Length: 124
Image (cartoon, rainbow, N blue to C red; front, side, top):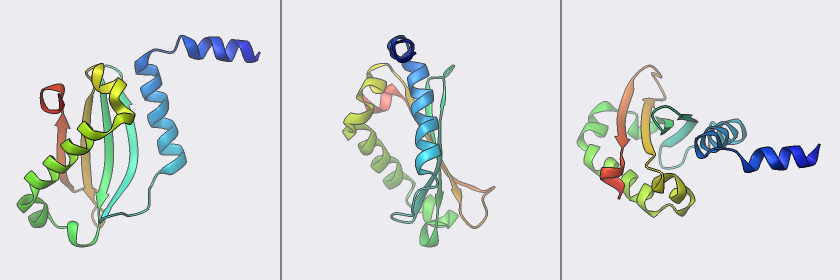
């Protein structure tokens, strides 16, 4: 039985691996503790669009549409740098995956405060 599991994992596509890892991360770690007024609520991977989506929430002083609007470029630049500098997602970047961030208000969860989809044109 163990050989079957090992054999199956050898044939796992990169998209299947990404979906599995996103699901495992969400199950094990989400919601994450708040760090720098931000919490990760879940991570999902869409196989068709090859997009990793990070659903997060802003808390405290970041939970303010005006503050986010005024700092939109800084947030985008910071996330882009994190994507470029992250060796853990190198294989996904090489495969041309997208990385999307959707950040909601912690106080009013239906309110999206920030959203950006990073493509290969931005991070390569």
